[in-house]
Length: 467
Image (tube, rainbow, N blue to C red; front, side, top):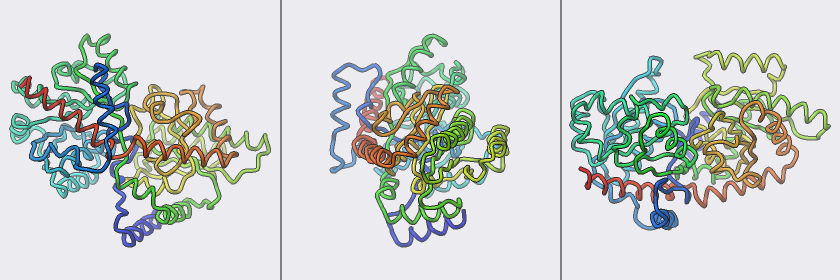
């Protein structure tokens, strides 16, 4: 890892534009803002949808569409401060608002028992350096800010506990100016204690149509409550990441150093999964598929470069039961020379520059969105993804990547897809180029700015009416 850091520092010195703010790219990452014509209201009329589509087609030139937020007071409420997707997404929103002169205050509602104090300090420091004020969630300052704020953004369903737990009798005064940003796809988040105030906020913002429909149905059927005006907001790549992705010299240097640190050659094929290591992200099934693909290559006597699997997002200190299972599987199958575990990191761009194919193998309902997918596409990488969740709204099957079923049923199809891309160089490269074109069309920062501005205007207008 030291060699990668050296390479990265060298690039920064040589190229003033290469600031890899991959703080906002990780894990499940999957993060960011608001792109594609899919950015419309789930409850909207055709006229409302047309308005959003018109906004999304606006040129990237001209004044910042978020300029109307100048001098506005915005309170951002995060359920935690960590390297997971939700908090990092909210931080990017904070920086975008600060960029147009908004006054931004951040509070973190809870600190997990196993929280990394070093990470928390680093992220808070970064916010303070960018002019974001950081208050204690239960402080009088936080309560006063909520009362005065023009806009309050609750991040994730769990953040709803802050409303009644801290605001108490002031909740009703704050609800009309709340935008609730939801990323969760798991059933255990549907608890009334989290979301009982959801019907009364100014609006909800969700990262994919699949997730929005899921929330609409589950809240009605399980909790007996109705979703507020809901906006589907696809995410987008930051200018910083795109700048690195489009710099051939930077990518070549990063590729060489990362591959050297992994002990692989330049012509070896690397299939990587970049996510926090957990069963829901499907690293175990990926390794089974990878093992099967090696057998297929042998059986069919295919002449291909050495194929490797890379798992970025490991936690070597935690030594979880699941990660132990992964490593034992690798040893049992005697493929340790083909599988590489990389500890979780803020800087995923070097790995995107070094690999050949991204595997997005999230299970159950899939990713809410999965920002790492569009980041990989920016680096002209094809994506092998599960046919679930937001991945289906990003990957064009057969054009920018290949989809496979979730669960054990997807192991052999994924193995076959690995084989297809390992043996067909032209297809792999063409898919990568098509993915890059798709990113340029709908997944850039200016798409995000235009669409998030549309939502914020709607929410502010509604807040004035309800307030």
